[in-house]
Length: 245
Image (cartoon, rainbow, N blue to C red; front, side, top):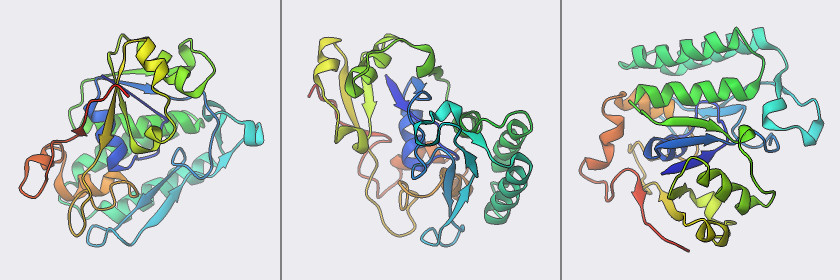
């Protein structure tokens, strides 16, 4: 099973859960950069109040302005960005009893900030280290290195077919525009991915808005993959419903 997703800075729990559920993550790195998306920013939230949020943003230079691809975006001020990332993550999660795991992930991102100004590389690193903290053993590929057709759904179907996947894990956003026909012709089953709708102190509260660092800081890397088996959760993690349409 594969998931296809853009590199996101310290991704939301909903995104991380989808990638964790897949055997392969195809990094969508050759599409247009979107300033209002999550490639260069993440919402941080205090441990005791996930509804109070602050953006952590990497100031980004777009060489081709609106036509800039994700892989072309560059940090506008790498040294200042490094300081900001370190200070804000420590400020929000340094008091967590699981800080050691978060610090390890943070240090890997800071090390990457020392060696590149490519926003996509930094965001991808932040995803990889969180997946590694959860024990994910999957494979990572990049869309820029794979041949595809030009249509949106055709491209995704071709990307899913390259590593030999028989199932494509698709979130709610993708399902709104996805054309299933290209997948059917390649014998690939589309699997909708949905996280539980939760309120209150649940780790899924804000899962589609705030960074997964909050859930990691709250539950720790060992408990996070198993939260769906706790009382009060109505479905496995991830909640999957196979479909061919």
